[in-house]
Length: 311
Length: 297
Image 1: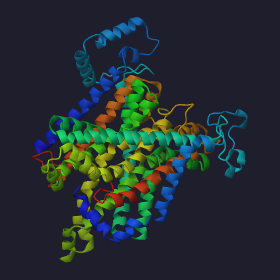
Image 2: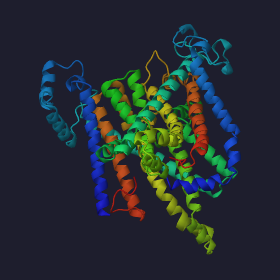
Image 3: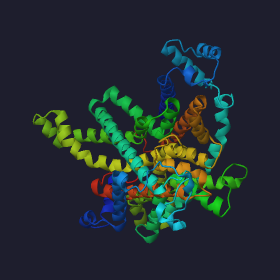
Image 4: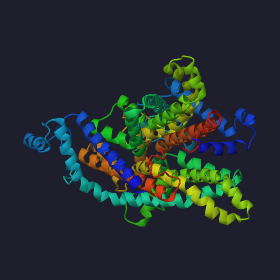
């Protein structure tokens, strides 16, 4: 188990290194970083000092090493917008993003899992079809369009909810609904498929045949086995959740990392973009790592010695 | 893949297979019809658009659509610059569909080629390609596209290549797995024993055998590519004015929700219906073409 965890952690580190390297490569492809990373009206002396500090005249491998050292120190440059360190600007936005993503994830799981279970238990009934139709609608509607429809209905027409900002808990309602809708549909559909697969297994039939009542069979055998693929699925969805959060935050003026990333991309505030992208990449990679390790802990079928069991 | 088989087998046996293969339910007919309409509209855009999509007329700005008290002159109303929304919608559909199709095809071609190379060469090349697959699978194309556009800037060509990043790793995984397993299949070894070159075997026998899975994967990827294009354009990072795309129209209409909701809602409805119809049609196609595919992946 320890070997498995260590090999997974090594892989996560390798992936993060690849992300950092990609940022470095893309930035060098774009040309002289002192032209790109500094505002246009920078004085020549400051530019020269910057080139000296980052060793831009030095050979590529040395530049790359300096970049790696700077990243590990959390030194990713200074925001053009207000002159503060890019990492601090991003760090201030992180709690808002985690709050929004956490609320949406909780909502999607609390509604999506029961819906999927009911649909699977009433397989091919009208209830099943209605739930699956709602699920398909949920993940077909683009996040930005759903957000705009909610603003039109609840903020502009009915005037029940605020459309932007973070002052009260009410401000969290519409962004959470917007971000949760797609995930909710996918969770319901995935849970239904996972349940149907487990319900068709022979150990379920055996348990029923030897006289175990329906509910204990569901609780003891079906749910735990259906939860494992759902966990893996959620690991894959983390990245998309953060992508959706970027859109949702922009629409509802929610001051999170995603909105920061989009607005910095618009104004080409490159140090902040670097920091935000690397933060998002790290969160996604760590979530996937956590899912892999939890999976190995709860599912004895994983070959933790070979460490290459699930490709 | 083998895990998916019993499940699909169980579902398939619920209905007679012969009837399932022939009958197209009403919902699928409607979805296919809508998609055909979208394709026709994008091909015929210059002929059927009543006005030029970029001509401004400030005297006629923010006119409502005909079902909201407007006139037939501007069937879907006008936007904040007095441009005809119907015409913009038609051209927006053209741009979005063209970009999404190009992106899907490029992604499929790159992903398939990499998967094939990985399966044929194995070794370190395989390791590197699968490493790239893992990185892409962890980090959505959305973030890579934003980073790239922000750091380097964008034009239409770069933008198409960036949206093609959506889902290429799926093709690589799929093709790699299928080619490896097909190459172990008896018929491939038989043809090889008869003296056929391995590349010829792959081209003539393996590729046709995995083509159905590739088509199915493309119906899964296409809506994602449309969503990526419209999302980036919505955020102002994709198609730039004076060009138009569905996402860009929606993004521009966002500032006029109170006075003129139709600017944003019209393109939004088209995007929603398109992704919905591709999903429905893709699901249906998947059941017929490739019963071994996991319908949720």
